[in-house]
Amino acid sequence: MRAGSVVIASFPVSFTVAEAPVGAACKDEPRAVRAEIDRNGDNYTAARRELAGAFAVVPIIELKGEVKMLRKALLLGLLALSLVAPGVYAQQTAAAGTAAPVANAVDPGAIQALKDMGAHLMTLKRFQVSTDLTGERVLTDGQKLQHSAAAEMDVDRPSRIRVRMSSARSERELIYDGKAVTLYTPAQKYYSRVEFDDTLAGLVTRLQERFGVEMPLSDLFIWGTPAAPIEQIQSAMNAGQDFVGDDLCDHYAFRQGALDWQVWITTGAKPLPRKIVITNRSDEARPQSVSLIAWNLKPAFKDAVFNFVPPKGTTAVEIVPLKTK
Image 1 (spheres, one colour):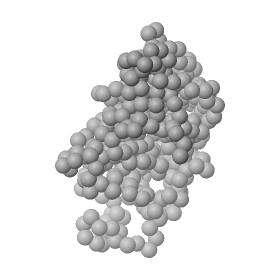
Image 2 (image 1 turned 90 degrees about the vertical axis):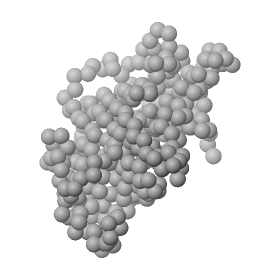
Image 3 (image 1 turned 60 degrees about the horizontal axis):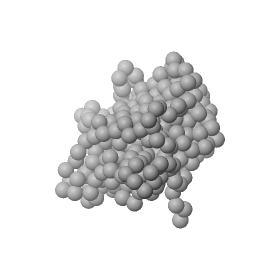
Image 4 (image 1 turned 120 degrees about the vertical axis):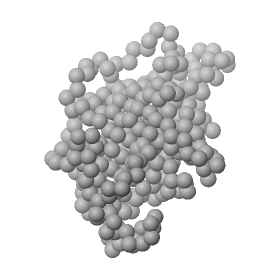
């Protein structure tokens, strides 16, 4: 079993499994950072550690420990429910914990539900979305520790977003105004600005590929586009219906490589994801993450939220791209 194995989640289908303990900087610091002042002193070292740890894997549960804990493995730990949709048991004739073979592992209806959800997400122009998530970290002796984090996003498609990520350990912000993206750590007073010109879907992809930075709930901007990894899904089923808060949702379950993930999508003509659960099957401890998602489709935020003005006393730091192989 890996030390510090974590389950994180960003949104289904394009996750990675993290091995570093939540809140810890990546062992090889894939994104080097340089302070613009005192490069050989304490400011340089501190800046490197802070930005590398803060956005290395990003933000949601301390961000890839924390951010992606929604991508690293996270998204909230599940409640084991004794009330399960009849259709689920109908497919399980083998012993508990063993999935029985089925004639068609991929239910076309479940795949269509993802496509419908993606199509609806693409129609949203100006909105707010937030997530409360909980993830599990597995210690070397198999004991699991649970951690929580939250993220709030102001979105104005096609190319503006402000993300605030927080946990008991840290606070991070990501601001994109359509011309440049800024990564900011308020407590440490460091920020990094990179020129950028693309849609939000392009921002998600290029930040990850170029800097290793993951944005919380990043797949919300991928579903409904040709980049949505539908073909990677190995099994899919409709697990019935449940309430998430006051919303009646259709519950779907998917398998993708070493990850099992579930999504609860609101019923009706405006399908929105309200809950996501991810289980890492590559770890015998089966760590999980659970994310509860809330939507505000009539936000009151002003355009000024997408403008970053460095607060007094902050230090500009350069974030260096990942080395290409």
